[in-house]
Length: 143
Image 1 (tube, rainbow, N blue to C red):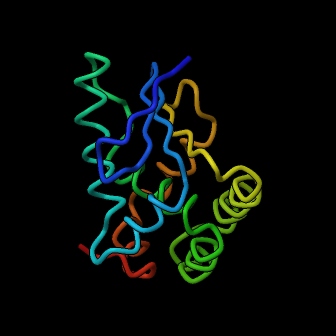
Image 2 (image 1 turned 90 degrees about the vertical axis):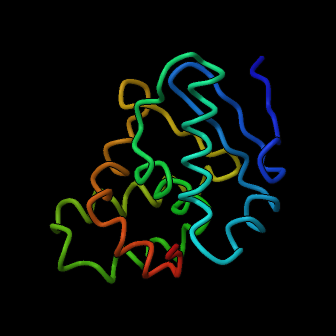
Image 3 (image 1 turned 60 degrees about the horizontal axis):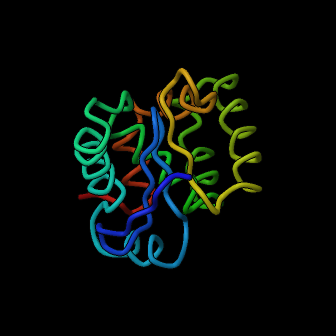
């Protein structure tokens, strides 16, 4: 059974092979509500600790991870944000993103952040990576 720890701001994290799980609970939401972009800082921390605990790099970019955390934590607001940037996302990509958002609404208690090889949604978060600064701004998460 994987082991959870809360050494970072009482946020529950679990590191397994090619996957990090984050408990989307009151502690995470309180942390994300603080000024700045907590998702970005949490992503940097996760990547650092993953390397320490697993002795290898987590093959997920900081922005892709941060976007995924924000999407799960603020699913409704995130979906509205995607609608606002419709001129920067192709219609096909936007439809794929919105479909992923619908699936995520049903599964937000644990955020599963996996590498491409094991996480079929990684392509969505990677697709949004070039828009990270726009997303952070629209969500009010500028550093």
